[in-house]
Image (cartoon, rainbow, N blue to C red):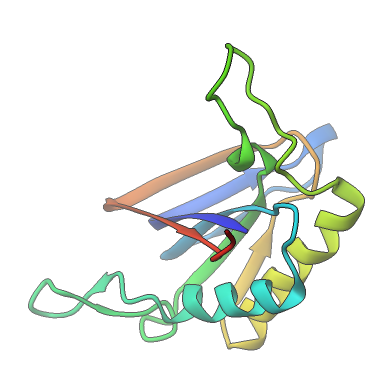
Length: 149
């Protein structure tokens, strides 16, 4: 799994075909890519890391507080393009991304695991074209990848 985590003051996702938008206030926008070889155990481990990642500032301005500490929310959006390999040619190669029918349950498992830790979670729609808006706080952007060879 690959996660791009952005600390936000607010974020929202607009769904296709006029579906309702989903939004959060202070918290994290998490873009989730699921790769070949990922498992529910990987999803659970990264969910725990996300909820406890100390990237919010304390009173002295130091990164010392987690999403749980600040009682923030998470907007979790699937993004298979995180597995785009641009090493050859001009078109990204997405063969490292897991097939959608297998990736969707792992994306859901990740979001569910974050919620079970006590975080309010909003989600995008898996596999849909969406418009994501955010106000990055800092800016702070962190990349996390599961430890596969």
